[in-house]
Length: 354
Ligand code: RUB
Image (cartoon, rainbow, N blue to C red):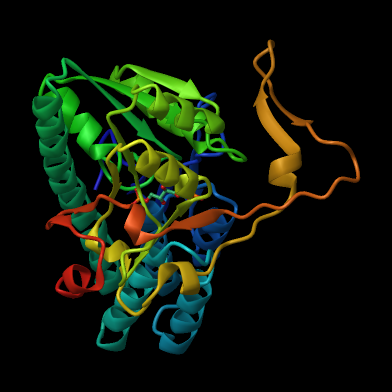
């Protein structure tokens, strides 16, 4: 499993190597994860992020545990459960670890079986994102035909590209596919405070792919929608409940409200393993990660000398709140673009995917 557009791969020593996303877009630095604890820390400190990739790194983390603790099933299981709780909102993490635990339960050769299962899960994501790309690009084409557009303006929030899920992303997959089909596409990229996954990661991906894009402060989307400058909003998701409510990066909900008010289609793109079929109501039940307030107080960037600097942007002593995600109610979502087609955001349609 290698390839230009993967955020993780096994190196020649059988260790997991990942792109350290904390240094992008200024530096493409790799980090080698040799132990299960390395994998767990990489998820916690956001060396890797994005629901899909978090799940993949967790699966390989369990393989690394199998390599470390040989035949000690109990220890491997305990370490796996620790990885499972590294971040609370993205359900792909729990899905991936639960599948690994199932393999462990029935395995006589845990190293080889865990490795095979982690590779299988990751390769499966590649097929999922390709299908999402095709289905999403069909939607783009049909909106363009209906509105007789020559250029298509699409707004996205956070990063749901190949850095988030191998190897063409969820929300960005239709954009990559549209580019392949020769569609003239322009992307409004929400900066996505406080960690700026949009400004740093989505912009980096789109620039690398030669896709026309404009970075906008998070509060700009509503104005652009009022002015008719957005033809579609598309984001990824970290967990979608049985009733169609969708958790994604903080700020997504406000974009969905603005889209509804302005008649702009609002789509969520996700692989089936981002559904949480046990969660009846997303707004009521999805746990929202709260992160350190330092992420709000301190910004990092590159100075004129090319050195990464952290600077404080708030008064010393002020308190900050840092909710990582919000939940967009199903009633604001036009459709859920999955590898199995566009699903209506309601219990009847989602329940059939189980
Ligand atoms: C990432 C985020 C992304 C989804 C995309 O948040 O909200 O939109 O994870 O999911 P963070 P996918 O950067 O805090 O992990 O992996 O399916 O594209």
